[in-house]
Image (cartoon, rainbow, N blue to C red; front, side, top):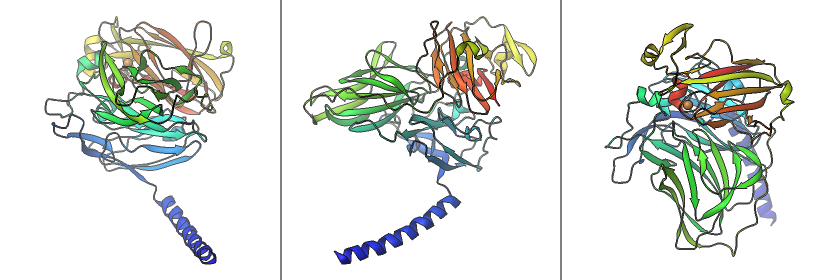
Length: 461
Ligand code: C2O
Ligand code: CU
């Protein structure tokens, strides 16, 4: 015993010295997160591997996991042939780390580097992706998940992240390079022909009956809205866009996931051993199994009790809505819309000229990023933005740096979100506390739509 204690002490001393050195070493050179070309087996095994762009050359990129309140430091190294940035989607972040070219940083050129260093105030399911030529870079596979862990995670047997993507592949399993197709831009965005979960066409997990899973669903597609269903799994929605819902709600019926949205489910495997449970995507009511859960055994005799709500994050509560600062955002353009023209660079242009420049959408009559913000607020103010979708298309509206609530006509606030799906001709009003100074984007997360004119910004001082 004395010997091992002595060994332990010696070992501990050596360890702490090593720890100090590596801590110092790390401070000098944080971990690298590169963006580079690679290949991935996206199509079935009898096809060739697909050339992709990915973080660390993989799609999805590395799964990043930190504790709530912890710091994430990564040196972004751009080995792509295009400038790029990293946006940490949904993190209520220090603005300088938000990754928006020409708003929060200069885009990092090929062979350039940028140090991202921030803390994550909220636990939940987040993700990271480029914000320069996003419509091309994300379509090539550049994205990854960022999970921020609760100090006390809910009781589950497994915690799985499912990044759901929609690829446009050619017959020889290459990524179709028709990124700028005006028909995609003016319609529903670039829709693909091949759906993967975590970059795999036949994603499968082997599970046990009555096992409890936390499934963190993320829509990483350029433009596809997923309509999902569970078979052989039963459970609850516990968080949306990273933020816990006040009370877990039954995950029955169709689960709608617009581009960039997340949904955390806690589900139990309810089918019998030998059968299969699955996550199904419905495309025009045609079901397609996108994730299979092969049930091998039984882990316990019955389902666990219903989960308690996840602990809320420190998002500030809304101030009085009648005193809030207000703005209106009219969304126009696209095919089958009534838009006649819009302003670019302060000049009025007709629809034909707009199409030639790729700008086929507008916010409040402007088809490019405005010089002045949609709204200027002082930090701590409650903001209301009324968004009017005056187009024939649905849009997934995303606000940077804040989570907001949709407020209904009876003023009951919906769950916190960072991206909401708006139906054609729908009007939605959102409210949030602008508590984070600097400049924040508000845009459609259908990437062809934001590049095509659906982008504005807010100023918080
Ligand atoms: Cu997912 Cu502007 O971001
Ligand atoms: Cu849109």
